[in-house]
Amino acid sequence: MDFLPTWPIEFNSMTSFSILLVAGAMGGYLAHTIRWLPSITGFMLLGYIAGPSGMDLLNADALSSARVIIDIALGLILYRLGLSLDIKAVFKNHYLLLATILETIATLLAVYFVLRYFDVSALTAAIVAAICTSSSPAVLIHVGHELGAKGPVTDSASSLVALNNVMSFLVFSALLPVAHMEADASWLVIVFEPLYRLLGSLLLAVIIAYGLHYLILVTKQAKQYRLALVVGATMLALGLANALVLSILFAPLALGIIVRNIEHENVISKIEFGESFELFFIVLFVFAGANLHIDELVKYAPIAIALIFARGISKWLGVFVAAKSYKMPTRSAVSTGLLLMPMAGLAIGLVQTTNQLFPQEIATVSALVFGAVAILETIGPLIVVWAFKYSGEADKKEIND
Image (tube, rainbow, N blue to C red; front, side, top):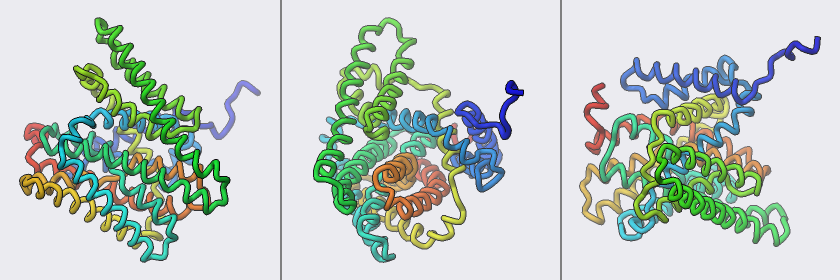
């Protein structure tokens, strides 16, 4: 009877997406009933329960079929983060430049030497250090929106997170020739592959950004189509980056940055994504929770905890020193540094890139990064909630509702 479905039923992207959303909705409801629990933690908890380590509703096949949805979600989040980075304003704001330099160098050195202390190889330690330079835009954007946070601390943190992710990608790219040399690759691959991935992604973002800018101007009388154009442009960047073997992480981030900086009136930058954008946050964090593996966490817990401590102190201290150098209030200095603590999307994406380019390094890299991400995505939202409230920029009505 060929008309009957095969058994067990094979998961497709739509089925996986529905399970991710339902699990996320239940996680959000759990967080709503437990007042101190951030919704992101609820999403991840239900993702873990629904994942392979729990009820196995989201098994390996389901998670694999959901990969394209996660790429789209992460791409849109990175694009939105890129919109927060005004390059001219950053170069005029010496505090942001100093904070980025201090916390990036401190994080790279601290994580590298901590991992070397635990006898992790030099190359693996450098790759993990580069990945750990990144911060989670999803946590910052989601929790900030949830609390109605607005003000200079929120704006500074958004710019610093965007700069973090750019620096993480640049340092990661700079390590590719070293990794290629250890793998005995040809000099053509050593020299040109990193340049191709970096400059190609940037060029792609420039072309799409100017095309989007032109279309928005042509259709300026029909504002109802602007969001569709933005989402279409972001997905085009993701699709072409994937087809051209470029970075599906850097392309949307660069797209957002370029769009923000070629506009004169911020027409595109001010487009509101609306409540439907929350769906992408939900699926991303449920997916992250479903990918948690307790056995790996236990095995690498001592190193992961040391790594998290070194990373957290470095980022916070770098931002704090920069802030106090410019005589910023202590409350603002403390809060801004704490808002950089979470690490997720870009870090997971760079692990996948490591898997594609350097499979010989992936076992240790993935265990260390996923272990750190699991812990940071559990405690990170709590830290961010506290930081927003401590800064005084969280909307009191949102907190009390």
